[in-house]
Amino acid sequence: MKKLKEIRDVLGVIWGISIVVRVIGKVTDLYVMPKWSGYMIMGIIFAFAILSAYIYFKEKKK
Image (tube, rainbow, N blue to C red):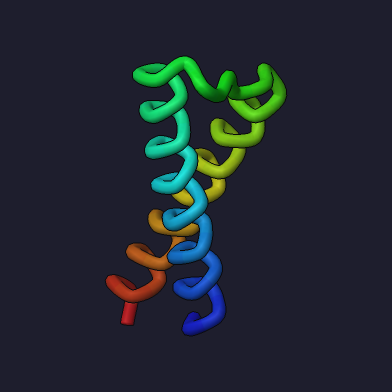
């Protein structure tokens, strides 16, 4: 369970960094995110949600 929490935390950090980069890019027009990165972020959000739900129900069961 500890490994799953670590993986979830790393995915959350990646997600948070991507939000910051996207906001700074939109505000300053210095960086435009590629279209494929949106699909990658959606995959990270989906994996984060699945892991969070799995960890929650696994710990609730104990």
